[in-house]
Image 1 (cartoon, rainbow, N blue to C red):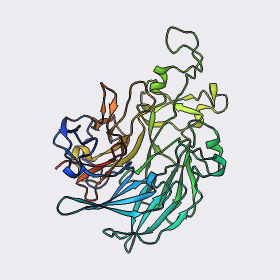
Image 2 (spheres, rainbow, N blue to C red; image 1 turned 45 degrees about the horizontal axis):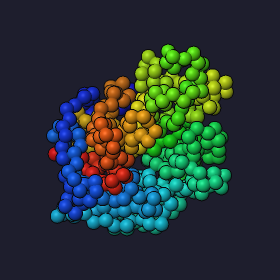
Image 3 (spheres, helix red, strand yellow; image 1 turned 180 degrees about the horizontal axis):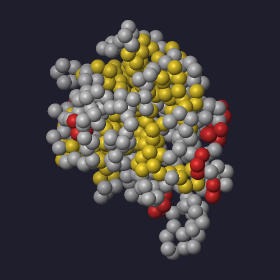
Image 4 (cartoon, rainbow, N blue to C red; image 1 turned 30 degrees about the horizontal axis):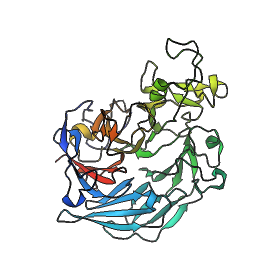
Length: 429
């Protein structure tokens, strides 16, 4: 049984809520495409959403003071400080430059000092940090030689070299090292293992493999009031049918066939409680959403390429996935809301940004979803928190959410969108 953050034990989880379509509020100075026309998003009733800043290909975000937010721009090799002025305008300051694909950021506050941690594709750096300052202290490399597109053995081919980090309440640093490929066993035998999460001390020492079989855990988070590590994980693509039977009634044996209706919904993306020494299956097993439990505590199917008919590894070797997310939704950033000032029905839950599919016959994702946290200590059924970046009818999108994080004062949520290059503020007051 989990221990909730102080004052939250009596909060009833929300499983459904009213939403309304609202116009995105955009400053005149930010009205470039796609905001050269009025845009609308679906949000919880009474909430508002506005454009805070525009930054090309904005990815992960970290609010450090009520007026200062750090935004990672991996493909520009820098982190930008977005400073909100008293008159409502914003100032963009190049905070850290000449980095290699920075994405994950974490702020550690001690009694005497604070440190900012940044995950580049090939290393993790940290530096003294004074919230409110325009510039960081001198960075030091605490974890080096991480695999990325420059690693000689990969010959420039690394599909998931952006990395995320999170710091636990027990002062442990967790780092995701994702797979380089869609479904190759070489990622599971490399040194370091590339489909895994690692644990370190705050100075980068005592590194160890914490959990594996995790294809691409873009988003990491610690459940408030606990030491539990949670992650959202992108599943593999182009999964062919893994059974010697008919998928539909019009055939006898569909084994190893690419069937669009199967690919569309298999395997689910994942929300997992990352347990020490656990193996979550990839690339030898994939969670099965077609079982009696649906998207909860899913059993596995054998991977048709790497473990056909369980010929190499048995199903009982792997730890089941806690919660499935519609296949190909591409969950990226995530944040727990228990320590924010969100209205009480929302405060006991998790928000996840779904970047959206590229390989599904009918697109999915392109929204921010909300998982209520149940008394069992597990996530409930998700609901759409913010949607409307995808037009279901035309199948055209004008935005792709990447990250969702609370503002430093807890009064709103910040959402990044790398397609339009936008940071939004979702506020409930």
